[in-house]
Image (cartoon, rainbow, N blue to C red; front, side, top):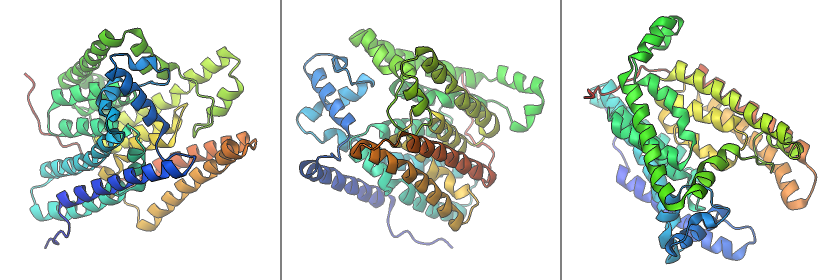
Length: 418
């Protein structure tokens, strides 16, 4: 017997949006009263770039604008209403929760026709969405501060949703657009390719069969082709507008970026100490890709049959081992968490313990970072040890999730590609 829903889905999403509007209003008050603004400094950059677009100029005339022109174009109305962009990002943040619900419903329609089972699962899943996304203060604050990462989360999840429906071409086009906005969605291509093949991880021992399945993966190759085409098309269009400055600021800068300021990445201190040694800096930058590549390949080979879990692990590892890691990047893997948490067979006490360990590791980093940035104390070594502890904590959580995850075979609506 199913339990009645107290709140409809529409009411939940409306309430979630109203909560975000409250924080947008609070930001106005906070920014007026305090020296340390609630509004993200990047939002001010977006607004200045949007003003340049409105004036018929290039957003890249602003040296700190390192994003796709799409964001500046979307935020042009900021000139008339300063909070327009925050509202857009908040809407996208709520839509991420909507896509999570759509994906869960889509997957369970494929996996079972028992309406009572689906209904009971849906009740539990709605709770996961509410706790982990719609009313999660972390991503609420990220969006209402004016950070644009809700947009990339939206596109990544939309890619997954359309893929689950068998809309491979549309999914590939969206993926290419997501890659245009932020380079990192490229990390999902290996798992998508294997997901669309007849590959099963149990066949990994048979190399010949594995290679044969890959070579015969028509849908996988077509997905990659369409994704690359979408990326190149969107990039070429904006290249016609803004030329080489767009290519450098949107892509090359991020690939060659060396950030010596303190952040969650353990690489920050070696990069800081070697900033006058270009060869050593280059070596560290190249070396930092290897753990990410290894994790990406392993997770794609092992877990591509379960894309939400695979993408969660892939993104978690990518952010953890990245040479630059800030708290806003955490949202990139948070958006997959509601899709997998109900299949992690850990009791609530163990889950809360993992959460407490993760928060403690962050606090252990944030305290010396605060002492350095606002009090002027030399806490670089303490911050670096905090970064190492945070990395180890992330790895431990990934291992625990892998050990206690209930795997399910991939379920896709098969669509013939002409």
